[in-house]
Length: 123
Image 1 (cartoon, rainbow, N blue to C red):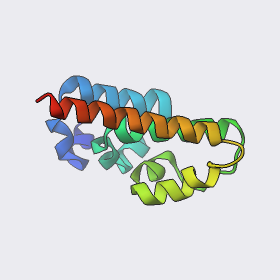
Image 2 (image 1 turned 90 degrees about the vertical axis):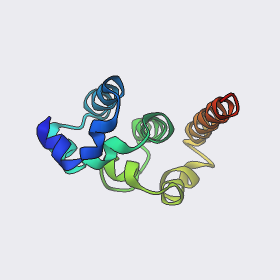
Image 3 (image 1 turned 90 degrees about the horizontal axis):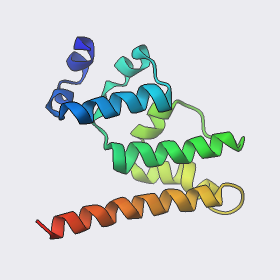
Image 4 (image 1 turned 45 degrees about the horizontal axis):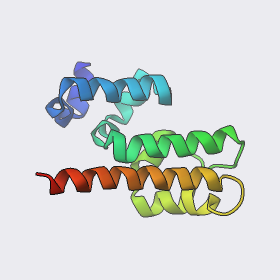
């Protein structure tokens, strides 16, 4: 754990329960082992709700259907900027097989933005 904090010191600023949720997500869902997590510690600073989970669910669904995904690890896909991710994973499967997964991905992003907007306006 100390190595992780050395690689990504800002991770220590997160609340403990949120930190643990992120670590569990990478370990249990994504299947990232300790070595890969240390190599890509910076991904721990990405938003779990708005970036990691929606991208993971889309890529997992596409992979389960046997669709040809661009090479690289999940961590690389998490790190892509929005436009590059859209071009590599979303636009590519928007029409045809996988289109329902793309719609689900876009709905999940819209739902998160709606929650963020409503919480901002209530403050």
